[in-house]
Length: 462
Image (cartoon, rainbow, N blue to C red):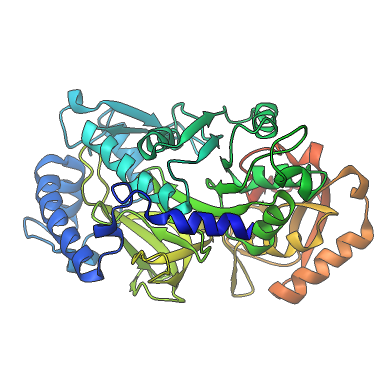
C-alpha cells in the first residue's frame, strides 16, 4: 500500500497540461482575482437572463445594484425546493434557464428520491467546465494516464456518468460496469483488467468483507487474485472515515482516496490526493464556495478546524447556474495547503444536514456511529443506520440503530451490549442496537442510506 501511495505521489507532475498548476497551485490572491472577474460577468448575465434570480433578488431588496463577490452574503440563499419550483413554473428547463433552449445539449436527471426527478441542462460550455473540474478532481486522487479504471458510476441519466468524459480527458483506460452488476465488477478485478476502482464506500466495504485474505486482493494477477491498488470512493460519506478506510486498505491491499460533488453544481468538485488529508476543492475559477454556520447561517471563515455547511455559487455555468445554493453537507476544514502543492482548502464530510439529529443538545451525525460500529469487524460488516421515527430533529435516547451483521452473528446479545456501550462511551448517548442480517439490511453492493424512517406508532400501540 505504501508503494502504491509513493507511486501516485511521484507521478504527480507527469502531465502538467492535465494538472492546471497555474490555478491549482496559485496563491489565494490570484484565485480570488479570477473568481471576482467571473462573478462580475455572471451577476450581470443572471440579472438579465434569469427570471428566477431577477425576481428573487428584487424581492430581497437587491434591485438593480451590483453585488460584489466580497458582499455575496447580501444575496439570499437558494434551496433545492426553490429550484424544483422554478422547473415547475416553466418546464422543461425552468425559470432559471439563462440560454435559449436550443443551446442545451445535454440533460441529466436527478434520482427523484424525494419526488419527481429534476432536470439539469448543460450547454457545450457547461459540459467542458464540468470536464475540467472533474479532471482536476480525479487527477488529484492519483488517476493518471497510466491508470486502468473500473468505474461503477453509471453513464445513464445521472450526473455521476459525466465521470466517463473525465477519464477520457485524463487518458486513462476505462472499464465501465453498470451500477449493481457486482459479478461483473468482481470478474473484472480478478481478471486483472483494472488497477483502480471507482465506487461507493459501501461497495468497497462489500468487496473487503468478501475477500478471503489480503493476499487474494493484492498480490498481482492470477487465479482468484486482483491487480487492484487504488480505490476512489464517492457518492456517500465513508472513504474518509478512518475505521472504514483502514479496513478497506488493509484487506484489499489498496490506497483509498475519496471524491465528492453535488448534482446541482457539478458532479466532481472535491478530490483527495494520496496524502489522504482530506478532499481538495477543485472548482477554483468556476465555483465559489462559502462556509456558513448550520444553525445561524452566518458566514464563517474557511480555516483549519472550522465546521459548517458548504454553500455554492456557479461562476461560469451558462444554462442553469445557482447562486448561494445550500448544499446540505456539513464539513470540517482540514487545512488550506498541502504537500502536493495544491493551495485550495481540504475538507472532510461529517454528514448531511438532513441526517443530523440532536440528542439532549448535542448534534449527532450517523457517520460518527459508523466510526464506532466499524471497530467491531469482522462480527459486523461496517454498515449501520439510524432509525428515525417522526420528523422531529431532537430525539430522546435510546436511539434505535440497525447494524448489519453476517448470519452467524444475527442473535449475538453480547455483541449488542458491546456496541451499545461503545456508542455511549464515545458519543455520550445511549443507543438501542438491533442486529440485521445482510439479506434483510438491503442492497449490499452500492450506496447506503445512513437513516431509515420508521412509521409512527398507530394509536393504541405500546
